[in-house]
Amino acid sequence: MTPTAALLSPAEPDDAVAGPSLDARGLREMAERGLGEGAARRGPFRPEVWLNARQRHAARLAAHYFRAIDVSVVLAVTLLCAWAGSPTDLAQATVAEAAPFGAGALVLLALLRSLDLYRFPSGRPAVMHLGALAGVAAASTLVAVALAVALGGGPLSALVVWGGVSLASLYGLHLVWLDRVGAWRRSGALTPNVVVVGATRHAEALIRAALERRDVNVLGVFDDRLARSPDAVEGVPVLGDSGALLSHRILPFVDRIMVAIDPKAEARVRHLMGRLGSLPNEVTLLVDPVRPGDREDALNRLADSRLAPLNGRKDDDRRAFNKRLLDLTVGGLAFLALLPVMALIAALVKLDSPGPALFRQRRHGFNQEEIVVWKFRTMKHASADATASRQVTHDDDRITRLGRILRSTSLDELPQLLNVLTGEMSLVGPRPHAVGMKTGQVESARLVADYAHRHRIKPGMTGWAAIKGSRGPLHSAQDVRRRVQLDVEYVERQSVWLDLWIMLVTVPVLLGDRAAVR
Image 1 (cartoon, rainbow, N blue to C red):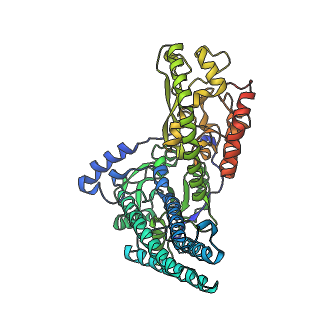
Image 2: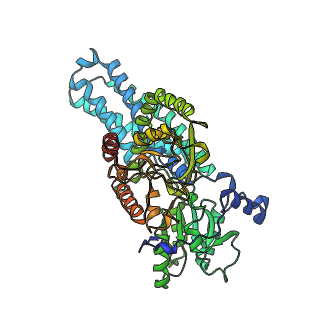
Image 3: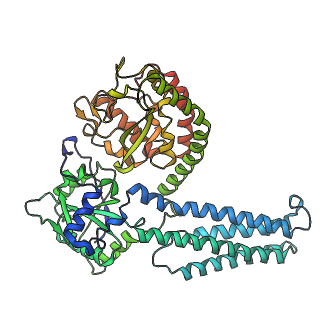
């Protein structure tokens, strides 16, 4: 069973047929009723650890935080030891005195990264990890001492002390990292959640192996041949057909969709993969194993839930880490700076019209997760539209006098800085649309096949579409297509530099646009 990613063609809008859905609580109850109290807490369900994809992805990014802290501590130890070992002021130290410390620190940090010591795989004992740290520290110290000798002799004793203090510091830090990763692995934060499409013998074998290993959570099975499908496969419930999966509330909890149908049925595979290709979740085609060990190898690759890699050409995790770091620094500073302004706006909203100062609305976030987004209230309290069933128009009678000013300047969006700091949103990204938002009489998500692709990244307070003129209400299918096209373009191009540019031009673009309805 060799997993092969296969996204062939986009699904048609008409394929997005809503089906029966269960949320996480419903699945927990089903597990407890159907499998019994003891079985409900093992195997594919584990109802006590239901974390959505965004929460598990945040745990994976911990590797970058671990390395950033390691770098800071190693540099601090290096400067301290270099200062202590220098016969003069550190600023006046010679190359022969300073270079060995710098070289040792660079070698130490490079080896930590190149030897993959930030992945913490489940099969590596803690003793082996700590032993690798000792080897890295010893090699770095030897390089530093050799360079000092080559340069005519330097503070050799200080270099040895540097190596010992660096090792002790790394031991202390990595014992904490090992403890945190172990806790995440036990809680399921690093355990992949999958759903299987196709109630076939391939699916049955996969689920049986997952039950035995207990390191892959199979949340449910979907099959288009419901009339011939059982109610459950190895204890995992059959939740509907592929149409039901397209709109199922379980999707925010799913890391991967595994298609377990016979690849020889090419037409069916192409059609099914095309439909599932409209979802933001990763889709994998399961192929019947050729050798006895193929299934075990595939599960090992799936279940080896290590932290995000720091090496290699794939940089999605690095981009996500850099983006989160930007959100925390810029968002935190902006929140503190704008806190008096937000307090003043809240008071003015209360004075302008009866009702609360803040308005909250359920919107789609990363991987179609439903999040609660905060805004200053700009409409009359009695006319608040939490589902955006009626989008805003010019001279909308629901908007208050102050609300028109807040919407025209986008000051009503400032409370979303709280969503940014909690990790539900980003400063830059596709704007979060309300759950069930309609364009005309049709739900907006049904108008464009690639609509869900905009959920492959966190929603933002501003974004590429916003500075390109697509902002505010969507009154036609053409508006929806334009917004989705720009959002998907941003998802594919996202970088820290692009985010900084978008933030830089957002204010002048929004204030200079008097035509857009907001």
